[in-house]
Image (cartoon, rainbow, N blue to C red):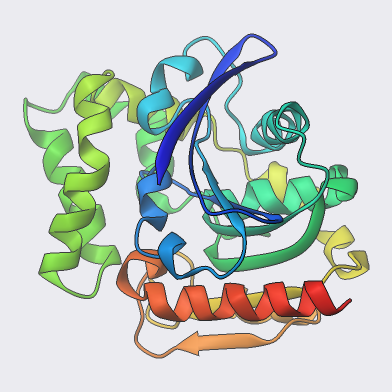
Length: 273
């Protein structure tokens, strides 16, 4: 995938892009960036694949300084970016916080979304998880932890969310350098403090009324976003649920073929509609 940048409403926005055809937008979460989808994107058939980076995350961490980077606001940034790129409607696949962004986009900007895939995504009252809430309240990593502790924290998150040590190491290598380059722990604290569960609880009652094709893919062993939330999404969105038995949180990195298969199946459904 090739990196692209554009100034949208005064915000320097970044995304990774490959392929051609109707658009597929991929959304990441915390503490990741578009590289989350590096092994999924090449497996997508017949689509222009755009992995958008949330302002305040990844290489775009500087764009989040002194700016609202809440999940609800990210949906507005995403809508503005899509309009700037001439994207009238797209299939959206989302993980973790990106799932909250996608839900807000579907509810508040429905003209822009033709299909929705969620994998181990936030929603309802499932988030922020306790370790993130503690950091948001105390800022402890930035203010009190000794040098090197933030890197240990990131490695711990990756190890808890990946099925193998090799996958955790590869994910750390893909995502950690952005924190190293742009504020380290202070950037993560800023992200944590932007998280407000009201951004999903306020729209959860509208999910059953979304009239778009959807699919849910869930690692059943995820400690961060448990399978009961995947089941709830499947019910509310009237969507098939594909369980990855024993799968952990970072499904696009641990199981790119499964995620790509489900995205391709969703695309077929959307094309047939």
